[in-house]
Image 1 (cartoon, rainbow, N blue to C red):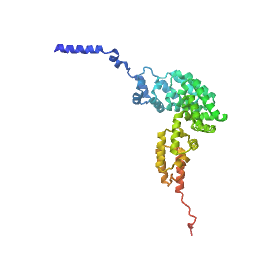
Image 2 (cartoon, one colour):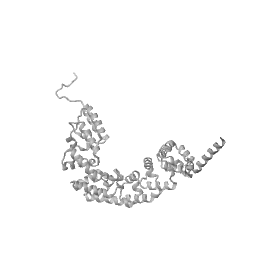
Image 3 (cartoon, rainbow, N blue to C red):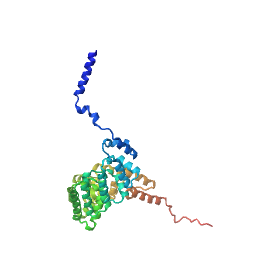
Image 4 (cartoon, rainbow, N blue to C red):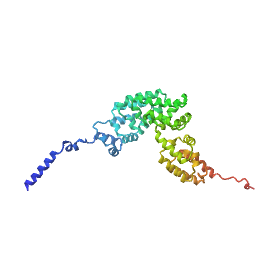
Length: 375
């Protein structure tokens, strides 16, 4: 019996010895949490459990600068709860070296001098602020370039916050895309005096336009020209669609236009008129358009009404049905009335609805009714 036990133990030892070194030691390769980091974050009221769940690796780093990050944010005017939110969402910030953070602060304040505004940006876009030090030269060069275009500082700040990739890459790439946009605008008859405002709106509405290849814009404009759109109409689309024209491609537009023409049963000239009134039609996929056409027709809206007010296609079926139900309360029938009342943002609709409500509640004056006069 003793011999069997001894043999069993020897076999276990042999098996353990036969295991590769990296398997036997894997449990010791994962370092323990840095308790100084954990305690510092806890003192700042950071949600440690959330950090462990989403970015637990940060807590295992041997070097962290939690106090330095908190001090920098406090110096900018951030409150305790704001600091806690920033570090809960983006705990990687504590891994940024103090010199790196100071450089970022100086770069950002060159376009966003108000500390209160900068704190708001960091709260909403922490990853854009706490970025790699290897990008500082590119950031600085890109800031200089966009300032040379006389763009509003607010626009440059928005670009840096919402599309940081465009500032972390070499400035030459952004210069090529901006020149392509400017040249396209001028070639289509855009006035030099209005170009800066047009470019600002484009970059503000779609900051990621800078990351698109310049060839995409040229190909899309060429495709639309082949479809019969005039130079003035192309300028209208470029201004209306802003940067979204670079999100499209000839194949997707071809499918969308073909589907729309077949569904609406219109000529190519009529289709161009519809697109000019509703440029967004160009970038809706077939399945989205099919669902919206079906929803509108199911509500009793005719195809002729849709042709007259194509912007109603920008609304989801759910929003259309909700607004129709609210309008019915005040006896407004979209089947016989204008669809304009359905259009617009939630704020636009509420304004139109309010006017309709007042109109329906206003007492009707009867010119032949006897007047009540005190004796």
